[in-house]
Length: 97
Image 1 (cartoon, one colour):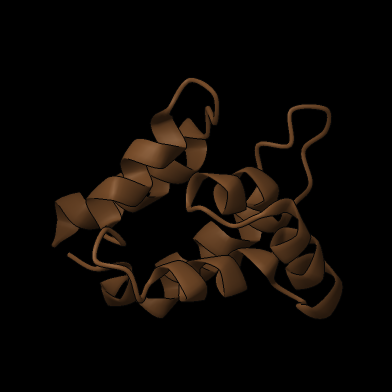
Image 2: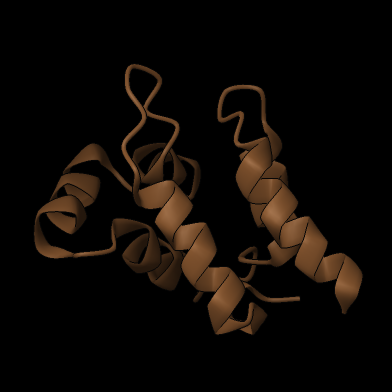
């Protein structure tokens, strides 16, 4: 299942959760950007120009073959990212489909 298949309600919740800055670990949209291969400069520009950085990052990533819901959940669960809360939101939706 592609990231673009996530229903708007779930997608909006995921973006909202990732848009909230979490310091000092930065396990928010900034780490998401790093995990999907964006540079620090690209991430900074997205942060400065978008009202929803997580949405913009996921949109950029969604054109890649590896942009699946399963891979997103794996990224979120990595020890370095540690966003089980967001992964659970996606898993709940996947389990209902």
